[in-house]
Image (tube, rainbow, N blue to C red):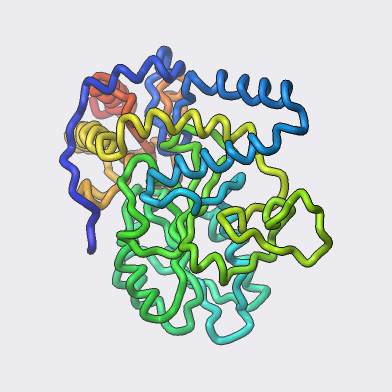
Length: 392
């Protein structure tokens, strides 16, 4: 496997200075950033700024709102190594998946869609609907419910493959996939690779050029703490010129305020995949949320996260609990799945006691510490998990 740059786990107590920026930390033990990041205190001010801009400028605010869209897109692009001016925004990843699918022709022999069996159902739902147009969806099997062997994915990608909409991190276990190797194989047969990095952007260092992927998508409400409504898509600029989405709208037009009749003249820049009116308030929020991540740096976030995850692993193993995640730090995202009998009931009790996390079938408790969490919080959480699991 081509592993990412090794980062040594290192708990950094100095990051506790950011805790006051996230109000929920004052009254909860928040270990659910893999599902929904803690809201930054600045969100209220960001929404107030949106209201002021709209209230003061009225309809003339549109040029400024375009600047907000581009600033937000360029800011998130820095977190996965993409240049400015190449990333588009929309409300969710399902839209981007469907938009890319709408560009492809499944009527010929190159009609296969290859992805892992453990793909987030949201993505599978989208591609499954294209079976009616001739798509052959191949879900590559997992043996353990944690990982999908890279070799099995590589073998599944052949000359009939049109696209590989793969996840960087498997949502049910946190296992990282070998995106670089998958991209290399796809290039050999002329297939596209669309990487869903929702589970990793902001927690795992990513460089789209080092991967040499064709498309990357993700969203802001997990590790980016940017709330719902801001998803993003980067693609190679030369690829954008080839793809003509059937799902489109006036903001994807090269001159949106000319209101020209159909057919659409697609924008020649990163707005090519925009559709209707953007969710502007969400972009104000996301733009604000990204600031702390840039200040801390993803490598520092990763090192701190791995250090805290190591303590979760050690405590769970000492208590004889099941780890449903890879133990090798280089092969895992930012959460640890911990399972045991009656874990769902324990999850509900923990939530009632303000230990924020989530639970998934065939996974158990998903515990995702972020840069604003502390070692003391991890120890307190694991004390309670072990006690409720009946191992103490």
